Length: 61
Image 1 (tube, rainbow, N blue to C red):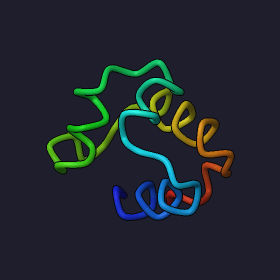
Image 2: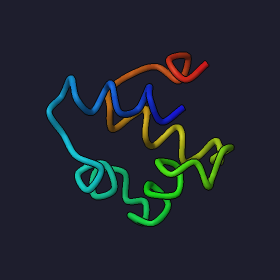
Image 3: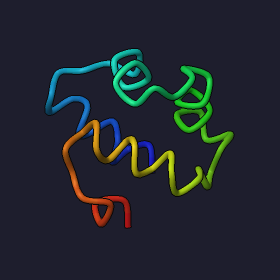
């Protein structure tokens, strides 16, 4: 899942820190997803990430 998030971040030239600030999620939560410690983030987290990246939730399938 992180590969898809990272691809979108790279397209927008944004960082994980930006993503945390934009979503209002704790940086540690974003970092856990990045390091694959949180392999199934909650639906609400994914909605916030998709909104911040301006993509559909379907992108994460």
